[in-house]
Length: 535
Figure 1 (spheres, rainbow, N blue to C red):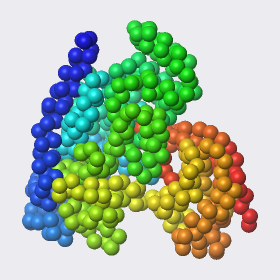
Figure 2: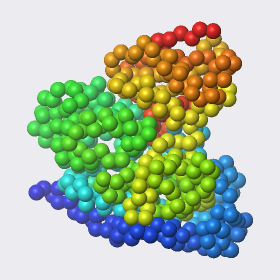
Figure 3: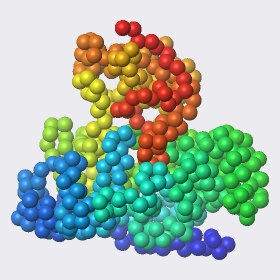
Figure 4: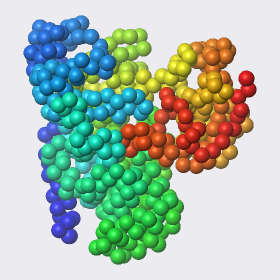
């Protein structure tokens, strides 16, 4: 066994051992969700009772969950603007007793950037979820401990300058690995396939070539952890399209790479079936697998049939909502991380132990970062319980509503339509977005697919959209023109990512959306309209 392999196994052992206690406490909390949540909330209120926000809402007098719900209003990001301004000006004890370490930009698909306060308490709350997940990962997939790992580290300078600040507070992590905590970062440095510095490359071409070169030079790759599966599929597509360029980067960057390994890579056919042969020890790929990420996650399953594609659960910039913990179960609520509430379609706001299996809810969080009864606008389905704690399936963003002239198109409705009308069609990319025809608004469905589209697709699309009475009325009144189809000739996902990155989003945060609020996509995609809208 080589020295590198011994160091790798030792680092894995250290991470698993250090996570054992957190996993045990998490397992105990699963058995008593109600009291675990109550203890967290009462402790948080005591800690922050003397802050500006705590005094305004009488944290010191609150003695129960019910009193908290009566005393503190539901909030959205806009409610925190004045507080964030005071924090950025250097004021202390505004939202939290902890000092704010930095503001982390949100990773919304197309919405305006939000700055989320990040504190030591919030970092600990993320660790209260990440550690149990890692322990369960080692326990259920022991082959992960047999090799090195790749954690998606997006080029942050694509989004913000490295010295960006909002007032006196730094904006943004240096790397995504800061989510892992001190020990996690130490272990990550010893297990990481991609060297430090790659995330600082400004040009996407350089970033992809450098990342792929590091991956190709690592035959012992055992774990890949990315946010969106499309981040990884685009990386793999890049290799197929720029093979010689990537291999040249391998030769220049890793001159000591095993010659047999390089010869093996060079001899493989240039088709998607090669990836399973490049990394035979790849045990787990961790990524989003629900809602709009599902098609790309399925593609990863096809590319890596011998690898477990594990859903990450619901992890937002503001909070960790759920995590994979028990094989055969959907991700379970991160019961020790934050205080959670769930708003049903009837408007009732329920505690975690009060939700019903089979019902959909919008998630509300209270965190150590200073967000209180904060509407995440994430929709989840309760799929069951692990002991007394709910398991959740992410359905989509509840705030993804497009409203040009009163039609109020919701992303979940659009997703159902696309799943219906494109059933059986090999979709590489599809998205509905606002468009214009002769100066009047309409919607266009952009499709990158395999095979031929059915001739009745435009009619079925409009019929599906018209099930929304607001949309149907807008079309009947002439405010909207009927929807049309744009057939993308190829590379739809890459063009989609390129536009969002150019507008400031981190590549690793780009995730396909079935409904976009922004227009002008026909200028980004190569292809043609299949249907003409008549006036």
